Structures are given as structure tokens and as C-alpha cells.
Image (cartoon, rainbow, N blue to C red; front, top):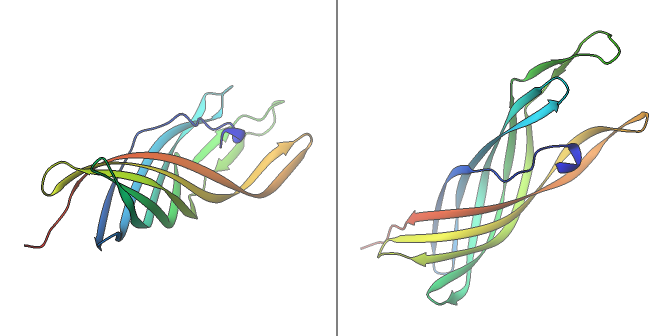
Length: 172
């Protein structure tokens, strides 16, 4: 996204995840959301808030244990939703022409990822963890290349580091 002049500074995010499993494997659902502000036209001070929310199926498989810490492989697949506030902006035309109205339509795209997680027991039913994941998704793009406007579909990637405190239900 940096190639399209997006601010790609790391941002805080929040989410919820519920996993169920037995033995080495667990699967579940995750909701993850983050928000950023992106400049549309720096000369006019135009910017929009961009909300990125994902709903994903998640899988984990334990690879082993090192120093009482579980090492897990992770995989995820789901839907990425990008929404804009405001969803319509007006830009002044260069050269004094008619202002340009831009509708920022929400987008929904498939997203998939994989990574590593480290989880350590804190107490009988509580754990703490760190997960690093790389996710990929595609977007339709349009940008200027000289005097021409190029339209196409490109792949983008997203790196996430998640800290987790979890409660694990255990059967009596």
C-alpha cells in the first residue's frame, strides 16, 4: 500500500478469537479490526478514516514445545472489509475546472494468511501468547503512469503481531 502513498505506519488493533480443539490442533473464528487515517490530497488537507475489519476461520497446529512454550503453526482465511469515513469527498480540480466528487465505496475481499504463534501457560486455565502472521489479499487498483491511467488487480500483504491473553475451558 506504500506504493499508493498510504501511510503504512504500524497501528494498534483489537479483536476476538474463539478456538476449539483437542490434542495438537485447534480451529475457530476470529474478528479483527483496525483504523487509520489516510491523506487523499495533501495540498487540500483532504483525508479519510479507513476501517479494516476481517472475519476469518483460523487453524492452529502445535509444532512442539521449547522451554515450556508451545510453538504453533497458524493459518487463516476469510473476508476483509474496508470502509471509509467520509465515504464521499470533493477535490478541487487543478486549473480551476469543475470540482471532482469521489465516492469511496466499501470493499470486501478474500484474505488468507499463515504464521507462527508462541503460547505459554500462566496458570491452570490462563495462557499468554504472541502470534506473528503474514496475510495476503487482492485489490482492484487504478493509478497514473505518465499520461495514462493504469487499471488492474494487485496483491497486497499485511504483517500482524498479536499479543494474546486467553482463557482455556477444560473439562472436569
